[in-house]
Image (cartoon, rainbow, N blue to C red; front, side):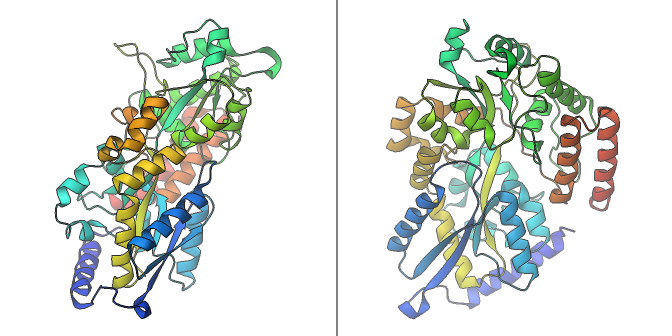
Length: 440
């Protein structure tokens, strides 16, 4: 269990060690090497960018070497770290892991709270308040202790082909605002016999929870709220969201039945096989580079129209920077310098421009890099602005097990393996409640 007493004792021990052990790097013999694990879920030269950052950081911080290590997907990264540490290894010093891994990583004792380093800053409040609130909500525990720093952050967004909008008689500056308009537009954009789909939602496969959450949230009930011990899967909002996702393929016939896979969807869009897609903003730079048409970007219109005509709903997503407990106090202090570097406004601005991920700090958007980028490509500002309506991404105690239950259940429903949605969700909810009973 993620015990508050254990966390307090760990925090106290680390604070004592920080005082007793000298942290300065004084000579070549004292060089610290940081193993930095990172995943990627999008196309683009991520490895090259991070290597360049490491070189820049090392030039500014003599005595600290950074060893970036690509570890596959987020799931691959988590499994690699678990295997390494459980096998007696030390694991990384710093890693980009899902923001939603916070409770699992803390409960397993793999990471230390970055709150201890923030508290030593000259102005901790100014540092924390510069990050967008919706990106910080998955960084803190129930007591408000900060465990990780936003870095590779995102929201899903709607991509659409403006040229195809014009051909279909649709206003290219007015993407759909709710799910009725989404269907209406998609029907006008779909060509027969699978020649072109009006819409592709990347929910097929093993990890549908993120985009599924968008449709549930837009219905008015998130899968998770403040307490990580409560999950809301067996709700009318979730049932209705699943029915709508199924209807997109089977009833309205505007996308392949069951949706499309994560990796194939951006390529289908840039090649003209789909007129609209749901995907991460982290794919924006790659899509803009590969599309030979004008790309439009909008908020996710996943729910029924409200009083203002909109039915928007989106979770945040992506990875945070975690510092690992097996590292020495000297390595942890060096790791914090690396975290601060990656989270700096300048690097966040550069990272956002090169990848499409959202620069997590407000001050990053005041830099020349992003000011000039948004002036030329307004698409980059859409996901940032969507943060104002974004909700908490799904996480909970026993997050890995709970997510597996949700993903397996939703995948089986979307694939047509289970047709009684209410019963399937009720059974999944019972499993989840059993797992979380000890935390309530």
